[in-house]
Length: 461
Image (cartoon, rainbow, N blue to C red; front, side, top):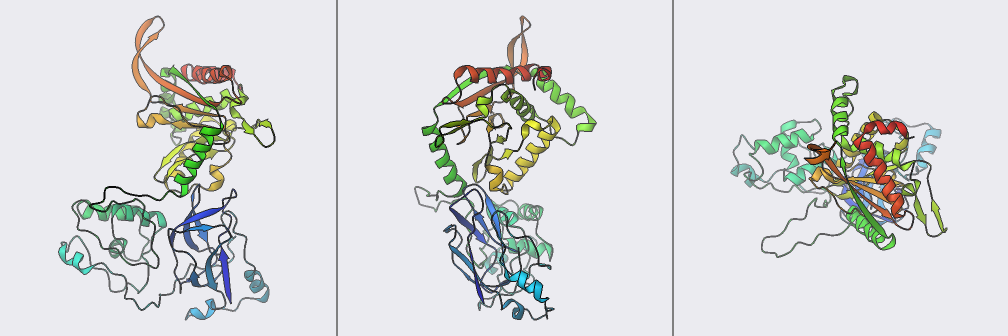
C-alpha cells in the first residue's frame, strides 16, 4: 500500500520550506523516525523524520525546491517494507501492527519512536556503477595523498556521516567518498574531513575533486562564480528571505529611535577576571555579554515598556511579566535571534551556560523554530567584530534592542584625573510608539550604572 507524506507544519505557522538535501532515494528502506531530508524554513534548518516504516517509492520535489506546507513530499510503499529485506522479520502482534499503521503527528520535531533497530538502507537498483572517485584525479595525485576507494563499497551506498559534516566537506571542496576510504566503516567526523584537507596540502594546492553522483542533487552552500561571468546571482530563500522581510516590516512599522551611551566598564572587567579565577565557576564561560545580559534583565524590571510589544489588531500594548532575552547570532545562513526563556530568573552562571548553549546550537544550524520565536527584548554583540556603536533594527514584535560595542582601553576622566580606563558604548534602539525618550534614557542609565559599578545590582530586583 502506498502512503503519502505531506510537508507538515514545522512550527510557528510557517507556510513553506526549502529542501536543503535528501538523505534517502527511491528504493531505500527506511524506519520510523529515520531522517528523510533536511529542510530549511524561514527560521531554521530542520531534520524531517519519517512517519512510516517502509520503502521510498517516490520523491515529489528535488533538492533546492520550495514546498508549501501540506504539499506531497514523499511516497512510501508500506506493505513492501517486509519483503524488501532478505532477512526474515518476526511478525508483530496484531495490536502493535494496528498502532504502527496510525501515522504519527509530525508537527514540530516529529513522531515518538516506536520502532526499534537501526535505519536500514537497501542498495539502489538504478543500473549505475558504485560511486567512486574520478580515476583521473587519483592518477594525477600522489598515491600517498589520495587513497584508493576500497572495493568493498557497495553500489549506491552513501558514506556514513552526519549532514553538518557533509555540508562542511562540501564547503571545503573535499570528496567525502575519499575520506570514507581512509576512516573505514566508522562514521566520518568533522575532524576526519579537516585532517584529510590538511593531508592534501590545503585546498588551494590540492587537485580538483570530482563530484560523486548521489541520489539527488544538494543545494550549494555558497554560490560560486563561473569564470568569465560579471555577476553572481544567489537565490533569496530561507533565513535570508525571512530576515529581509522582517527587517523591512520592522523598519517601516515601528518608529525607531536610537540613543548612545559610553560606559566605563573597568569594574565589570575586573569582576569578570575574578569570576574566571574562581575554580567553582570554571565550567561557566562568563564574559562581558553575560554581565550585560544580567544588567539588562535587572534594568527591564524598572522600565517595562522596553519589554513590551505593540498589538495593532487589539489596540493594546502587551507587557509580559517575564524576559525572554534574544541574543542575535551571525551564522553562515544569516542573522538569527534565538531567545533565552525566562532569562530574568537566571543567575549569572546560568545565563553564561544558556548563552554558550545558544551560540553552539546556532553555529551548527540546529536552532529550532521554537527557540527563534517569542523574544521580548534582544541584545546584539557588535563588539566581537571590533565595532563600537551602531543603530540596530528592532526584531518584529519587540520594542527594544541593545547593541553592545567593543571594550577598548582609552583615556577617560576618573576621580578628577585622566586615566586609562576600559570603555564600552551601548546603543539602544526602541519603538517610539511604546517607549518615550525619557524611559529609554533611564534604561540605558540603569544598565550603565551596573556595568560601571556591579555592586549597584544589589539595589535592583
